Image (cartoon, rainbow, N blue to C red; front, side):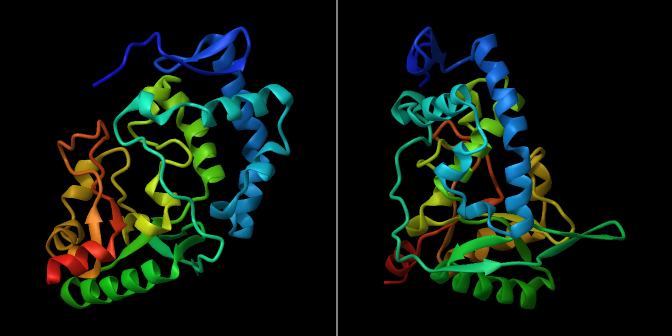
Length: 259
């Protein structure tokens, strides 16, 4: 399923095309300084509770010309070249109404940790609250929203941020973080939620930990009743890692199954 490593995307500058399998040393240095340059902006938007609504213009503002060029190069990567789960998805309508989820907390030992403010389209938020009320009745537990809606600009920042963790490989990073415009997190018509439980288990580094939760078993049995479906099951054919915490809202599919 992988295409050849010689396939090149758009360029950071004329002499340095992006290798999808491993960025060259000069480009990796630009990745590192770009992440550092964006740290104050990201921290401030988290403090304000507005990070998921970040725009490309705001993302560009603190950057040098070469750093902005890098962001444009990542945005210019053809998702079809990566195959897997990368395909362009519809952007939200300007009329989309979002509900804000602020003050969510989980317990880490004796300490309460507050999650960053999240946003969900109104219909997704209503279905989520109904589903969690049912889980609470059945298990005495609920799941929190660790990540809901993410604007394409927020998605681009996350892609850049995770590049070093995945060896500065665009292709490998894409197995875990979608390109901007290709993520279910930015598509209210198929809105994704990344769950975390009340003990802080999210499965990001160890999916088997989330998979072992009674909350996950409950989702497998009941989530479809509320219009939620697992996006990336184990052994999926999308070249995407198993993500037991990542579910998307698809009410029309649920309606069809009830007919």
